[in-house]
Amino acid sequence: MDEPAEALLWAALREGRRDDAVRALLALPADRRRRLRAPVRRHDRLVGSRAIGERAPAGEWAGELRAGHHSAAAAAVLGCSAVEQAVTYAPLIPPDSADLPKALFPGQLDAFAREWFARFRRNPKAWDRIGGLDAPFDWAHEGLIPAPVDDGAVLYLITSVPRAQDGPDLLRYLEARPCLVEVTLRRIFDVDGIRGASLAQRDERERPGRRMADFVIPELVRRGHWTAEFVEDGIRRALARGQSPYLARWFTRLAEHVAAPSR
Image (tube, rainbow, N blue to C red):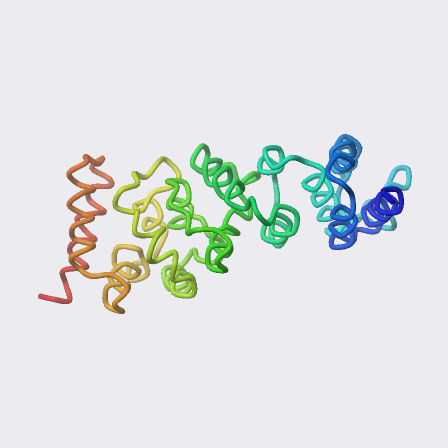
């Protein structure tokens, strides 16, 4: 029974059919998938080393290389890995970053969230390894995992979500996922920024009136998601903990903007 499923897997890899590869993997017993890990990793490395549009050197894929071949190869590597190995696979970009863990590890999505956000915190500038890390925010919104509270999740949310780089876009993104407003973002006053990922650095690249300090957080207060008292208490905690002059100025500006409507 394993042989037909294995043949279907290799056919899906050659044709670049990701979802067929997932179905073939799920039809294989776990021990057989583990034994296939080495050959599918070789296939993945070969596909990853070639440019889109190239022909296979020895028939490893059909026709010109497409994004679908990359997705199918990624699915095969994840599906043939233990979860401890799968969470380290990179790059895993959308939509694969959202879809493949859900399909192959539906009960272990929290392991992906923990490792991915720890990876971001270790190096927020490693752009070749941090694509697609916003998927856990959607999983949380769907009720598949608790809203993340890791330091890396907070820093990623405020600086690096691809669909939320502008202040109004971030506000829309947050309001569409209320659990992030209620849980993840509330930790911004208790998570220290790092080089490459901080509230102040985010606001530096935004235009006035569209920043975290002068738009997003004041709007969360104005719209009733947070209270001014909650924000003011958070600012006091952050400043009491000790901040660099750079970040201290940011918290001071935030205090001014949050207090402004009541003056």
